[in-house]
Image 1 (cartoon, chains in turn cyan, brown):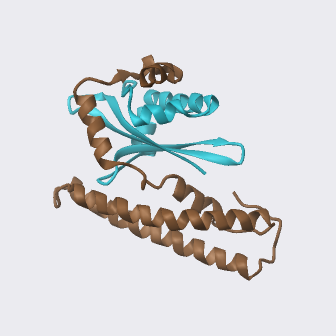
Image 2: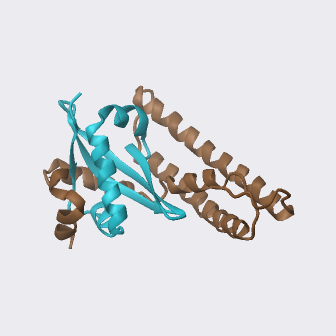
Length: 96
Length: 135
């Protein structure tokens, strides 16, 4: 399977949430997204969930000191003919 | 993350353990029903309904309100040297709880993506483009 292309929305609440992160966390966030795009198996089998109330999503954490950033990334494939592109619709960030 | 500073928890710590177990059980119940509905939608025995999705979100929101309060109490107990099993599990459940998601906003985001407003991730390296366009 080829590497995924990932499309994101500028001027969205998700992009603003990511832009507001501390630079070190934001860097790790994009690195994690890039890892998923380069490893479709991980994305498909390990990190992907699917519930109607949430849609397709994958989740990961970024630890920082004694706390943790929790990311939930809502996405879908571009269309049924293009399963190598995923569209990121929203990103939920929790810091606990 | 737990500590091992105390091996003989007092009644307050024991109570917190019990409440964590109950809170996590409540979360798993919501998730189980959510996933059950998900499976039914996937196999076509039920159709997707935004009102049902919002109902699940309301349940998650009520749970999060309670769980967040409990987490604050647990952190306080940990700072006082108590070992509270289940702390990490509770924190993870809260961290990944989907309660704050806006279902209508997600739908609008997908509509924008359908209109071609999305940009490739490669253009958003380190968030620079996202930040510039969002400001």
